[in-house]
Amino acid sequence: MQRINISDYKVTGPFQIDNSKTFEDYGLSKKELEKSLEETREDLGKLQDTLYAHGKYAVLVCLQGMDTAGKDSLIREVFKDFNARGVRVHSFKVPTELERKHDYLWRHYIALPARGKFGVFNRTHYENVLVTRVHPEYILGEYLPDIHSVEDINDEFWDKRFEQINNFEKTIAQNGTLIFKFFLNVSKDEQKYRLIRRLEKEEKNWKFSPGDLKERKLWDKYMFCYEDLINRTSKSHAPWYNIPADSKPAARLLVATILLEELRKYQDIKEPELDPEIKARIEEFKKQLENE
Image (tube, rainbow, N blue to C red; front, side):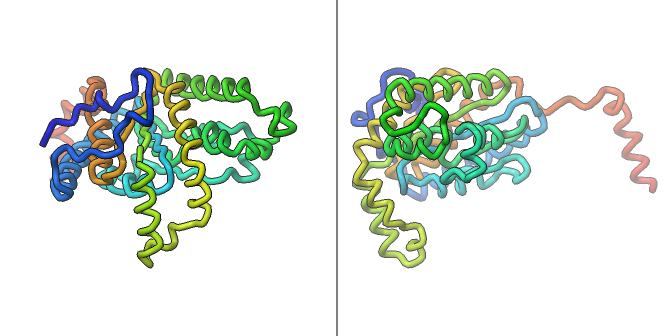
């Protein structure tokens, strides 16, 4: 197996989707990729226990990608060895009426993980500079005081929204949330294959929606928006990682590897020391229990 160099996938400079990988297998078979993931996620699960006991950092994992990119199955496979009390997944759909009565970041803010826990956003706050940018008419449903028609949604509007998102992430990062943002970069050909598979396999039919085909016709617009948002918002405290997603097993392994290697860099994440007075009386406490 070739070593996975996670820095190859971290966006630290100008990012171009056309020049980015959508496929990688690291020279491994599907079975070998799954075995490597099994080992990596076991280590990640142990680290999660330590993070939970340490209780000073939260971890926010953001997953973005086109339909069929593999977000759901990645969550299932990467976090399989986590203690359920230490991780929570949020899948953000069309905003509810209550959510529309708040600013667009509100529903994401209240879903942030507490210290010691992982939070996984399946689709994220970036939908607000992605889907709404492809379909600006959706903005009208946010009841914004200065927006009366689609014509009011101009470049200045998007500039402000990107600034707000960057400020949001900077604030939570400065207060102990470690942010990882993954763009599951699936090719248009692979998406076509996966959509056809949904239609051919009866147990996959429920995943298909005619709307998927309508959005597919807007592929180039989505790619422009993804490229722009990644370039505007990949920061040292909240970096984007381009994840080649045409191979689901390889994508899962890469995400797990990035999380494990980056979190291990935080040397202060350790299980808390037992109070010295209690530690000195461990044998005494054991005897009390044994003599019951």
